Length: 427
Image (cartoon, rainbow, N blue to C red; front, side, top):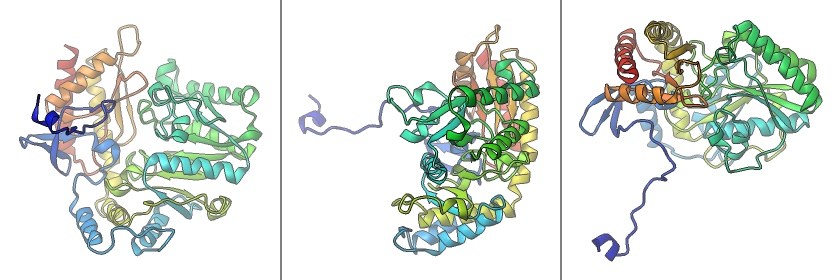
């Protein structure tokens, strides 16, 4: 019998349900690179699932967090107020869409989504919400009820929060339609939903991502957002834009919805907001936010002082280093390069993206999803020193999410590795 068992000690371990996307165990990060125990360098095109917007350990973010840790770590913001939270709110006011002048802070994207759902229901007096097929809004119970990017998020936990109806998303490649026809189809089906499943008068809000995240990195056509805005205005429905992954410059605009002319009623932000520190928020007009019931907003860790200091520094870095424009330029380079590589491989059925959100969808000869091929290419990329993630309901989409600081040379480096990985993975 082992010494551990003799002493009656049980060794703890991570949940076996957690699945690590790559076999890499990192010890440090710097810019667009991660390093393992052997000091092997990896080009990180995951950015912590779009979180490390300013790269790993940006000196300005590190310095801001260090200063704040030495001054005030936690000032619970429904008990006392602290300057980092006040300053961050002022700075966000400079980049938020016009009219969204009131903020509520929490820690994760899921929490912010649930806060937005609560606000939508309380402010409208309506209970229903419409989401769009392939959506990812989180894993907590209310957020999972809004999520359709994969059955694994919803499986075995029902009944879920009632009142959520799913409408088609204009995923042109999946339907084999042009973008224009996909938009027309999805809007017709939304109108049909009003007539069959949920009367418009009962709907509190539409929830939509400007680019489907876990659902396959599919940008929303601007015409579809315009159609949602028109229907929201006509029926008194709130338009909630989940910018958890698309916000803070990721798409080549500060907010993903800014590729259209549409403005949201509620905006949700997280991930890239604080360069890796847990912080999220919802933004709405003061008039709309004031319709929330007293005491319905709060939380122990929301608006943490260190996270707020990191977020202020993140905003400064994004603005001073021109990272939104950089995301647009390097994103075009990455998308064009990925499409050139796909042109030589029929197993890549579609390459799409917006800014530094680029995806390659792997398919079988008959056009059906090919998750095994995607997995092989994904693993080959990791073995060659490029870290990527898969997504999509079938796991057949490989996505690239470099930090916003990535430069043209690093994009070329990533594309060179990607080309080799595709060749290896597809045999």
